[in-house]
Every structure is written in structure tokens, then in C-alpha cells.
Image 1 (cartoon, rainbow, N blue to C red):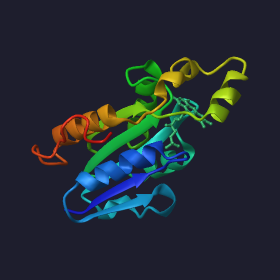
Image 2 (cartoon, rainbow, N blue to C red):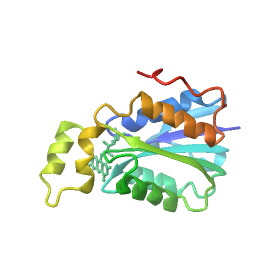
Image 3 (tube, rainbow, N blue to C red):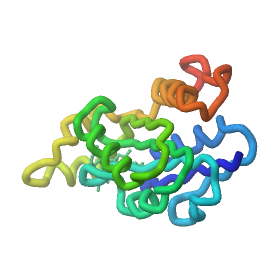
Image 4 (cartoon, rainbow, N blue to C red):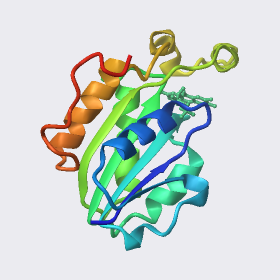
Length: 173
Ligand SMILES: Cc1cc2nc3c(=O)[nH]c(=O)nc-3n(C[C@H](O)[C@H](O)[C@H](O)COP(=O)(O)O)c2cc1C
């Protein structure tokens, strides 16, 4: 089974999730940044990771997701300044689903990703301020061990990793 992990990451949060997923997949796997990612059609499983920008997947990921319409098993993962259970996060993930319409989506996972002080300051100076800004301070330190634990659970439910593989909580501190 050929497996590909593709990620877009400006400040490293989404890359951490990508590397975690890659580390947990069984053999016959590749990991690529979205800039160097191959045509997804040659793979049985493709996991695409993006960060939210202006309420939707970042532009590079949007382009790649459009190429994923024929993927047999697509897993979506994301980081964002907004809270995991927020409307912003849900809308962003739904947008990714729309972009990849036609693919068989086996699972998706999103979690907060730390926002730099510089980005926070620039967002705070906008008028109106973006809705995700109120959640962003709580994203500090994410993704953290709890996020990785949940990600392992979702990967298991999606059938992409073995049941025995999810780690004990705290393993990724
Ligand atoms: C220009 C910019 C726009 C952003 N827009 C959003 C947004 O609309 N919604 C959100 O939840 N987070 C937003 N964020 C926060 C990032 O999605 C978050 O920090 C993410 O974890 C960054 O991922 P990365 O480290 O992989 O680049 C934005 C960040 C930047 C720099």
C-alpha cells in the first residue's frame, strides 16, 4: 500500500503533525512538503495537512487538494489559531473537503497551532479583527501531547494505523 503524507507549514505546527503521521504509518510511505509533492494519483493513501489562512486552507494546500479528487483514501489534517471545536475550524475543514470533492475521505483531524507574537499583533491591528484571534492565545504550546494522542486515535479510527499503536498519553511531551 503506497502512502503519501503532504503538508504545508509556514511556522512548523502542521509539519509536526505530518511528521507524527509519517512516523506512525507502516512501511511504503513518503513525506513531502506541498511544494515538492508528487501527483497524488499514484498512491493508495494520501494525508494532506494544511494551516488555516483567512478561514480556509492556505493557498498552496488549496491547489494540492484540488488534485486529490480521485484519491481512494484521503486523510485531512490541519492546525489553526482557532479552537479545535470552533466554527472557524469546522468551516475551514469543510472547505478542504469541498476542494477534494470526489475523494474518499477516511478521516480528518484539526488542532490548535501556536501563533507567533508578530502574527498576533498584526491580526490585532486589523479592523475588524479576525474571529479566530480570540482563541489564538490558548493555542500557545500546541500541537501538544494531547493533540498527538487524539491524532493517533483518529488515525486508528480511519484504519491508517494499527490499534495497538496509539501511544500512552504524555508520550510526546
Ligand atoms: C496570515 C495568517 C492568517 C491566519 N489565518 C487564520 C485563520 O483564518 N483561522 C485560524 O484559525 N488561524 C489562522 N492563522 C493561524 C495559523 O493557522 C496557525 O498558527 C497554524 O498553526 C500555522 O500553521 P504552521 O505553523 O504549520 O504554518 C493564521 C496565521 C497567519 C500567519
